[in-house]
Image 1: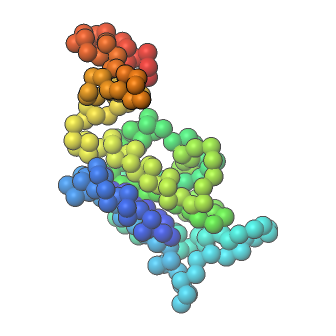
Image 2: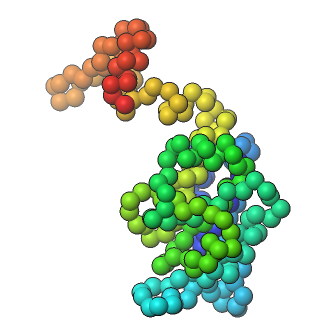
Image 3: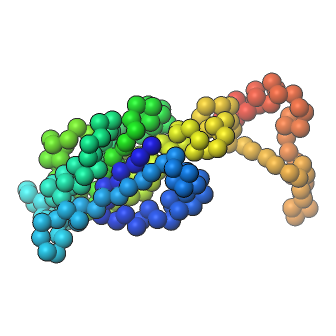
Length: 212
């Protein structure tokens, strides 16, 4: 699975991709993440890519042409590409959506905006889908892009090591316990629920279902 991130701030991803499961998946070549900065495709000596919006309004808008060139660079000669445009007004991102996209595409381009957004004409040049990670507005698309990479990466076989770790494909619960069976804090004892110590798997699964 190859993720292509269009962003003005590629280094914002360094710490997240450089730790834990995603780092290991990248090192094992199960995932690849590439970055394309629209500033690298600017046609002026100052690498400026933002301009005032037509029709007035606060803030700056990222120009279409540098983003289009960045997308084209990401696409190259690839044929099985999905382009996602991050927008608070887009379709709600879910595990089901992630699973569907990963099952059909080998390359995923995620367009991460900033400022007041990106000139909408890029959507006339390339077919893309508006996707939202929640009913809120952020200062930029980097965090949503990281979220999408994380969720989709988990759908790639081998990334989690044991594919049974995929919570959404098994019975799981928000209540989890480990050793010791009993601990004491400020004079009060806290115990693991007896059902989890029973060894009766069917009853344990039923208990988990009730606490999903």
